[in-house]
Length: 243
Image 1 (cartoon, rainbow, N blue to C red):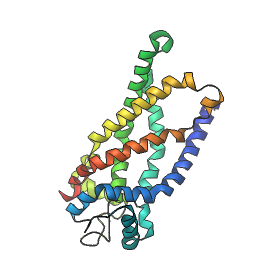
Image 2: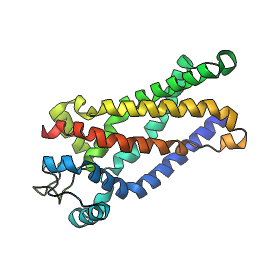
Image 3: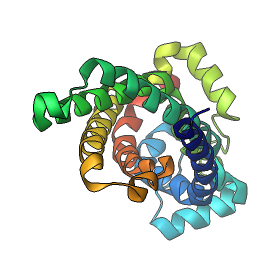
Image 4: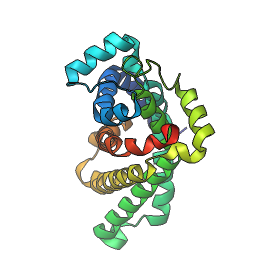
């Protein structure tokens, strides 16, 4: 194993461990965020009797009505998707870069930048095609309130139940509700990230500075993009079970 592959493997594993800890620590905030974002639709579906009055009220009601462990509902899918997302993104980026990539010495920085953008966008879109269902499952679980629902029951028992009920009612297409808006966001983010990062890295980051950039640091903007997307495409999700 070469030093480069050893470094990649080490960064990959350490990034996964960091993701496990950080995502689990932030899971209560993520759950409350999802509930606040989508409470309008939840009320229409009968999964929420009355709206939350704010962040504090949401935390209090979830704790009182569902218990402390419910703050981590949906976190399993969120953690699981980290490893394949990173592996697919870098594998597909290398593949598409061999197709779209240009040499900055031969083609100039403009074509070099465009090639990096194209390869990053294609890698992000392809990865999302394979792993979007995990984001779908995570969102369905995160917005599945029990004590606040009209009948006092959860819609799903767990991640496997999400897949089972969605597949039985809508088939594979049901797992890709909202995929359109998601793919736009991922394509833009991955394209600009890899376009800027891969183009500027040889110029700005040299020597030990370049080596110090780990895989775990490449997730920050992705979470911001997902926050915006989820509020938009959650309405599309609901067609699968309660239509």
